[in-house]
Image (cartoon, rainbow, N blue to C red):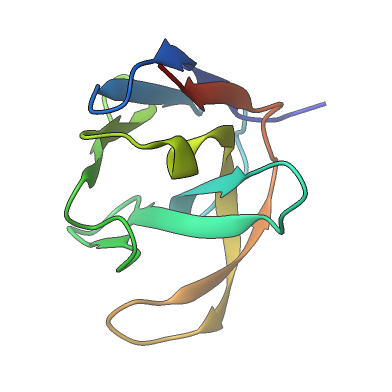
Amino acid sequence: QSQFVESGGGLVHPGGSLTLSCATSGVTVRYFAVGWFRQARGSEREGIANISVNVDRAYVADSVKDRFIIFKDNTKKMVYLQMYNLTAEDTGIYYCAAGVGIIRTGPDPVYEYEYWGQGTQVTVSS
């Protein structure tokens, strides 16, 4: 089944950094954007960033925008999430997915996501 593949998670100390990777070559259908999400144990999955595939636009949630950066390399079909100054609250499973439909247009569109990856675990602990 077609899906994205996340990598780059691991154990990091508070204040540390990680860069997550999302390999998108496994999905060949058209999609508009790639989104990053995370889910902490016992919590709902939350969207934290997304980036358009064919235009220069990216969104990062207010809760992390001072510490997280999303960027892409279209030639490699990769999307990255660079995370700085991590805290225990950033612990969770991080997923990427394809924005295949636009639910709401605007400067920060809202997408319908499919082709979810299996996720990569990020643990921030001393």
